[in-house]
Amino acid sequence: MEIITLQSGSAGNCVFVRSGETRLLFDAGISGSNAEIRLAEYGYDIRDCDGLVLSHEHSDHISGVGVFHRKFGLPVYANMRTWNATRAKPSTGYIGGPNYFESGKSFRIGSLRIETLRTPHDAIDGVCFVIEDVESGQRFGLLTDLGHVFSGLQKVIGTLDAVLIESNYDDSMLRNGPYPKHLKDRISGKRGHISNKDAAELLDACDASKLQWACLGHLSAQNNSPEVALATHRKRHGDRFPIFCADRNGALQLPRIEEPRFSLQVKTVSA
Picture 1 (cartoon, rainbow, N blue to C red):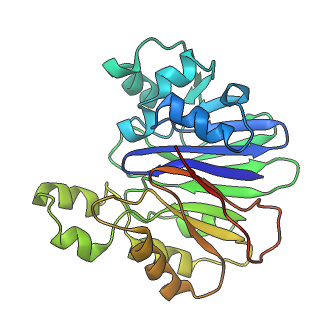
Picture 2: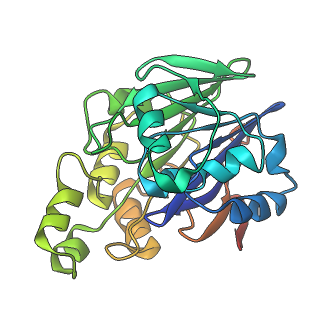
């Protein structure tokens, strides 16, 4: 299984997953041109993707959905409430009917089974994902916009071979930063995001014996930095597993999940 984060952060999110002949995009919070260029850097044509799967209706996850559908011909997969909220946004433009999935249940596209987990994030019906190759059993968790560390996350992570996990803010940077109090409360509240400390403690509490790597994602531009996030996690985990940090403004190709655990080269591309 191959994972490329085309962008991950407060300004936009889009993740490419390939296994065998199946190619999927998760979320479309970046421009179509950036998605097309960044995928092409790795030898992929965005028009060959088998679908676009939406986690929730916030603009940093769906701003490009209309272009992805109309220009690239990608079928859209979403739960009904997320779809209705996305379609209601004027910026979406015309978009054909979606393929509905039911939150909390699994569905299949090609050789990939997508498990959906409901999140307490402040979206209308937000979900995060576990993507499993039905032939090899390899499992990748795409766990962002979580709200808080909710029941069952620890057990799910213990089943994964790799994970992209939200590590949105540093507590001190948020507390002492320029945001107004209501926004600070929203971010750190039960329906906001999880911090570096929250994410590090969650991973530390899990059985990580299967985990080949973890990637930190959805970092805030104002209240976090890759250096701070990585330092927080490395202090907690040591060398239990490799830790990477997704690019807030470009693409990151992560190690193939089937590769063994050893030091690997990671290529980054910005457009």
